[in-house]
Amino acid sequence: MILGGGDLAYGTSFDDDLSERPEFILAKTLELSDQISQKPEFLHYMGETFLERFESTQAESDINNSVLAYESAVQLLTTADLEFPEYLHDYGISVYKQYIFTGAVEDIEKGISSLQRAVHLTPEYHADLPMLLSTLSGLLQTHFQVTGHFANIEEAVLLQQKCIQLTPEGHENMPRWLNSLGASLQSRFHHTGNLDDLSEAIKLQQKCIHLTPEGGAYLSTLLNNLAVALNSRFVRTGGFDDISEAILLNRKSIQLIPDSHSSLPLYLNNLVTSLRLCFEHTGNIADLSEAILSQQKCIQLTPEGHAGLSGWLVNLGSLFQLRFAHTKNLADIAEAISLKQKGIQLVSGIHADLPIFLNSLGISLQSRFEHTKDLADISEAISLRRKCIQLTPEGHANLPSLLNNIGIALNIHFEFTGDLAENSEAISLQKKGIQLTPEGSAYLPSWLNNLGISLQSRFEHTGDLADISEAI
Picture 1 (spheres, one colour):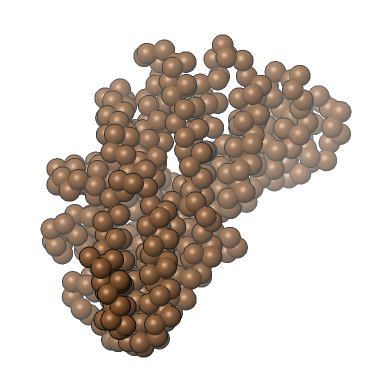
Picture 2: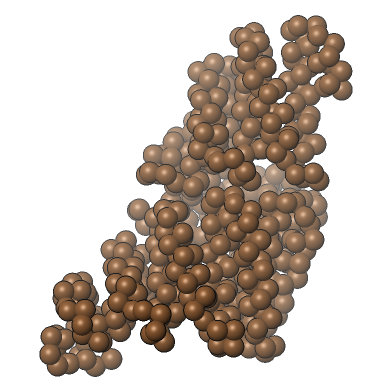
């Protein structure tokens, strides 16, 4: 892209200058008069350049500059400009990438708003509409995973289905669209427990892989996604073939990309999930040992400041907690608590996963309490879970689980202190969690059992037959 003349004559080649001193070129272009007709085009090109550089550097400054350039370009256009939907799409992608790095929910919301405008401005017959629909669907799915707002995942599924309907068979993007629909159906399954959604997601992802040539980073993505879906089905049905296949797919997805690939930490983390599930099923300590090593490599490859790092540390802590359950070595549970505390310390501001991290730390403290009977640990676990609930909005998919967990902790504390108010609060919270749980949820029997335990504890303390009758 050769640019010259007037205020834009930075050098003999815009591309050369941009590669050598991109920050300087961006700053100078932003200073130019908005009346220069080519300014939006230059800013858009710089947005692309910084985004490409971010993919290899993972430097926060690069993604910030990409967002700044794209946003500035969008602000200079109107609905009369033919390229406006394209610029809105690219800006939406850039702020989504920024969210992945920072974890700031407002970045996803900016992306959704930008993509919604782009879709609204694009006619039904336009060749770019399927791409816009798919990108918007992906952002809505992510927003659902962060916020638990069910309407988002419902809309994501409908948009992706429309995208596929508008795309002819044999189109080069069909595997991507099918994969995205599979991901949305899988997310909806996690909220509703409807196994039909998960089965359909697996079929779609298998079809994607069949349509994709061997080798390359995109096949690696598809293999990783199918492994995640098979993990979910294993958790639901216990079919060991699913977890065995998932581990093979995880390993192949990792083999297909270099150590420098930005997705490698995520794929390693997903391999860890498969190995952990296998260990929990078989008790084979070799699976747990491999999971710990893979999670440690994941952390080593994740740059400081990356939004995923806190989660990787919490996950590694959970692995040490599992090993503690196997070995009863207090050093393992101490390491689990330390890693989770470090992960939580890395969270700045309002982070969507903070309630999950706090709950996980509470689980580790409760585990240590069960071994040492140190009331300080169970008291802190209760305090952390109270904070989890405060941070979790009404209607969030995780709220029933959090209410169940704090009920368990309060009842345990009651059994040591005899404070009947704690047991009554436990029962009240567990009942609320059950009321919020959809009919048919796989978790419902376990949560009903936990409520029964709390009611039995109160009966043993008060002798009130109504409690034991309800518990039965």
